[in-house]
Picture (spheres, rainbow, N blue to C red):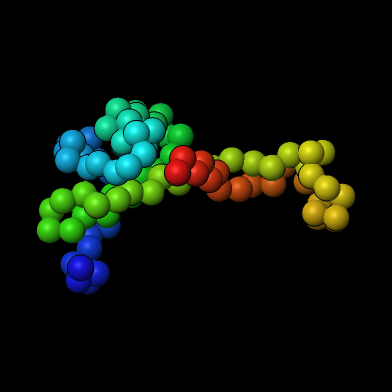
Length: 93
């Protein structure tokens, strides 16, 4: 595969991802049935990786937070922040 030919775009309503298929049915279900609504509701932003016009992968970034009171003392910052911003990682693999 010539990685210089991989195109990355933000998921759009008109994108046809019906040909995307991986070994994980949860991931397939998300990109086929949920990702566009997820993005419309501003819960996350999906980026689609395509090669010769065929979707070969995607990543969805979603914001989350870490609760200070649920963290170990040594992991807390010294400033008085109750929640730490974070990117959510839902590994479905």
